[in-house]
Image (cartoon, rainbow, N blue to C red; front, top):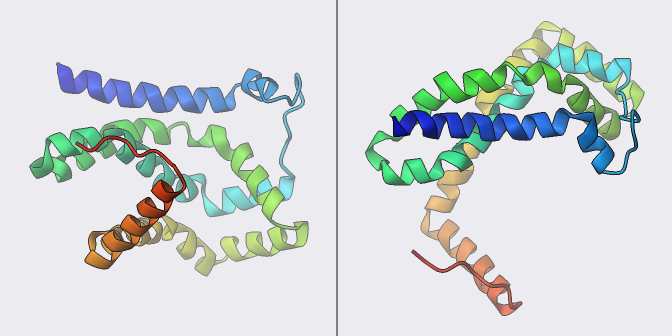
Amino acid sequence: MQTHSVYRGLCSGFLGLLALALMPEAADAQGSGPGSRARPSAAATALVQSIGIENLLDVPAQQVVARVAFPIFMQNPDRQKDIVTTLDETTLKMVRGFYGALNDEVALLYDQAFTPDEIAELTRFYQSPLGQKAARNLTPIAAHLNHLADMIFATREGQAAFGAGVNALQQQGIKMPAGR
């Protein structure tokens, strides 16, 4: 069945990228040397555990799937809700099973962005009842913010702003893809 192969392709493509990111050889190819992958601090690891990896990665994973699935949306404009539901129940469900493997990578991001004292303060916050509520709502809030940004670009003013950006790029000699 063609749709099944499309979904398998989406899954394997995303999982392939995930595997590449997690392989020590990928780090070696980036010049970090054998066995020299950075390890996050225990404090940053505790922070990621307090927030919940799924609360941090769901929106980015949904965005990757949406970008890859865009041609499917364009071919089926009247079935977009069905497409999103199906991809959530299949592709994203499978991908969520791999989130745990990214704990160290996410913790390293916190180590780079915050001081140890700030990480400790953030951890205390995310371990509190209010922090747990905030963590559970990161994904729905981020998804809604993305929707609001999409709405901005759907307006006449948003289209004009994007058009101005394209014009500015063209004036710099940047080539645009051929229109459809």
